[in-house]
Length: 349
Image (cartoon, rainbow, N blue to C red; front, side, top):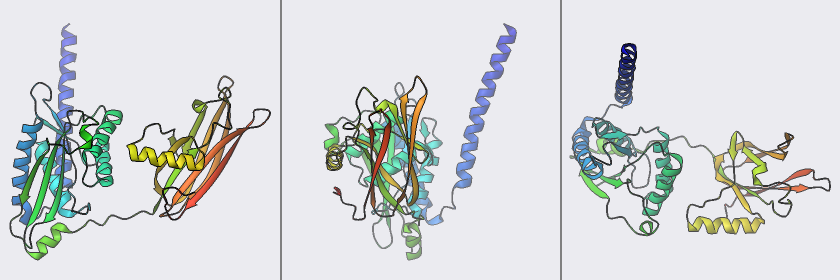
């Protein structure tokens, strides 16, 4: 028993030392990666950090239900939704300030949850209640291990010739957003405004400078399948088909983001005579490959493999429609139609 007690004590000490070391490392990394924050904006960020930290605790902290509040802080954009120097620095300072509070767990900018939030904001700059609900559904499905109780987003604009205005929104996420609520604006969001001290024209220009992100040429790719007319249900099912786009496995899309998407896909499927949608996203310009494996007999470990190279052009919509037909002996054959629409029409047929 004495040995067991000693071993347990050592394990506990090691665990705590590991946690402390990890926390210290995170703080060191945050401080070392932090850019040299301009002197003329320190007063603004100090005021924001104190106010937002207090508001976050007041809005999200609950001793019984949420003793630790999971927080996402997005980078602050300009009114056009562009990344700007001051916006990124404000968010960096705010994450650091909140992270110093024991009641907060702040996700880093590069965490997959933060990157998913960034994608959602870029798709809908005002970030409507419907977009918030859709993002909450993504959190439930993909990030169950990373609870998010509060989301902070913000925008930087020019209030006058010499002052900047920072609008900050604290959005509660610890309660499910119902479909009915998604149809109207939320009333539980805390919005705060902060103003900089008078700035020179050079300081104003520096603060609002847009971060130039190298653009990568991309095109839209939609992969569809027409299977029912060619395949007997007794011969095989969707479970027998495995598909890959390059090195990424894809599967049938069964859920639509919203009603408008459902209608759009219904029109596309009907126009191409397809029944299933497998992929819809932008991909990098250049050569790609579509790979399909058909399990003819899993018991006998018998598979039929097909591959198809194709090329994506920038600024275009590319449609891949595949079907599988069976000959008299039951041998499968893959047929692929490739349709290029340089006009990016919603219904290219």
